[in-house]
Image (cartoon, rainbow, N blue to C red; front, side, top):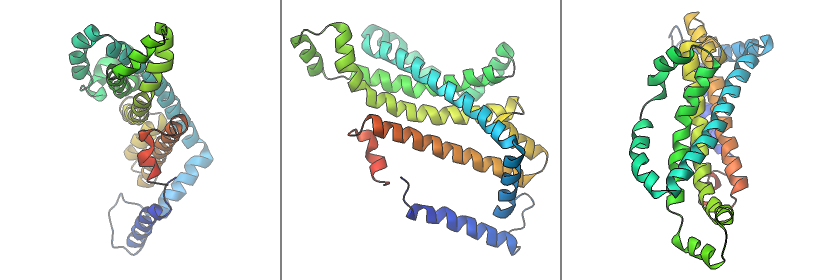
Length: 255
């Protein structure tokens, strides 16, 4: 859980923002008061527009993250468990994962056209790399003594993977999953802003074009809330799945 004391800073910031705008100290044309942003948020929710945009963006993010976990996990496991494959492919992986997904947007548009499919492909492309790299590294560094134990117990290959390798790799895979979920959200919103008038990204760019700063800030606020909720959900999943793992150390300090 987030510390209640930690909420004082954003609340104080919002209060100061409202005070400075209300008293005229801040006179920027496109910096609305928090009250105006809240009113715009209520209006968007009441009209159903925000719910539809949120549902669309979340659907793409969830599917992209799921595909990234499956694809990145499978490829990472293959690369990590097969030394010849690791030798010949890791250099390519290191190169490909440095290509920004947004840089591939023109290629994806020409190949697949504008639409949810293009967003899904780009988000999956960007989100798979932390899962792949984490999984490959974890598989390659499974302690030799664990494999010795498997041989001593005369475990089959399948049982060795299920009872020894998979549990050893799971923390790294889950750590990659946390990063993958956030990357999928980031790429989805950016691609929506560029190629489609739908979703949270589409709502942001339409608000900017309509010169409606309160509506634009409302969408930006929702994007932040979605990111925070997604991150908290993934952290909780790690905490439940690996209650004694070092992956929970940062979370333990925040409770």
